[in-house]
Length: 502
Ligand code: ATP
Ligand code: MG
Image (cartoon, rainbow, N blue to C red; front, side, top):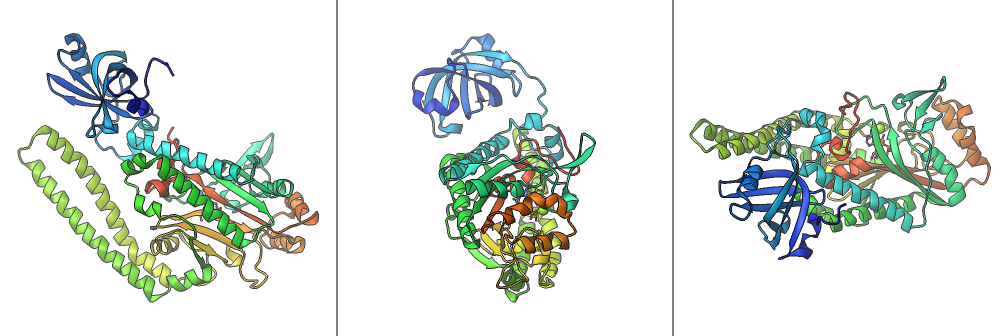
């Protein structure tokens, strides 16, 4: 960066001094005598005050008519002002327009999500996207720091692979010089071989799954971090996972408080994310789902949502009434933006009201042996104020590599970690089957081609040890922490089944 420009995040060190900042025009308001323009420079937002008489008349007029997202530099004195965005403001004495912009398509008013995704290349400049991007950066840094500080070695696993680690249906096939290969669904299998060399390893990279369901929690390309540890049992894995997740949340709370506030994250709940997390077995979850307690919980939720619906409808009616009368233009614009928000909130509440009985029925009729569905996970996680480990799933619902519980052959030594408040799964992990014969049997049972797994089976021939690991999805973690409904907001350029926008 040009050394002559001061970054907005360092303005606190420059109070009562003259500096120059450079960035883009984020928003502006004002009159014929004074203009308030908000500049963003990638490190923060700063309000600049342009007073007639303090700058040339020509410049005042130019700034008054300058379009949103024009690039410019502004020089002036920094004053502390609590009311101002970022806590400081700049009293301008000079400015220079670098490149004027006209007709920027994304205005500060609300737009539909489809429009914003089509304009993702520009929407990344919005304050909300900026806040999420900053938090994603912290999460990724905290992930690396945690493993690097705890004796793990980073192993880069391949993206082109011949073997499947997850369901066959979600493989993306690529033509590799005339032969089919897949894009990786997980680095786990390769990582297991590295764990037998380094002991504690992790991989971190893009992961591809041809997810055919359109849910708020599935992308076709996402980032996953996967640790793998030799000489570990299920208890050790759970401890590792809860320390890991707690350390990520603590780092975000430390580094990104103001972004969390802007995004409306539940900071009080995040502050509670410390070990130990809740531990439930799959069988206990089935008991909860089919219990009176769950039924009562869901009925209570329905009632709450109906109350919310009434309140939202009343607010909409009030604003519509105001819009029909005589009001100032700025008030009309503000109301219009609020109405867009309220109507989309209402649509969401209606969907939840519609789904509630369906989810209640699915839960009540849940039978032992099925995998937990999204709505079941949501119910369990809504009933807890801290993350919940769900362990010991039925063998038939899970991947071939998970170790059978020797004390109960019907279940495997695995876990999912459900984030609280209804967010759902952010981690899946397990102890791996370390017995050669059992693993061969599982590969055959699942109809996989044993030839492709020869090298993987070697690990069970030459010094097999108890080992295990897990995978944490970055976008889901960021969505949970930042309180985003859909994980597509938590990756700069999302890829989904139905659309790849830019
Ligand atoms: P789900 O049942 O929700 O599809 P999964 O059991 O397929 O998840 P795992 O194979 O255990 O998930 O993957 C580990 C983690 O990777 C998940 O807990 C989640 O955080 C993340 N993840 C899995 N699939 C996706 C996806 N399609 N998009 C984004 N993140 C994902
Ligand atoms: Mg899946």
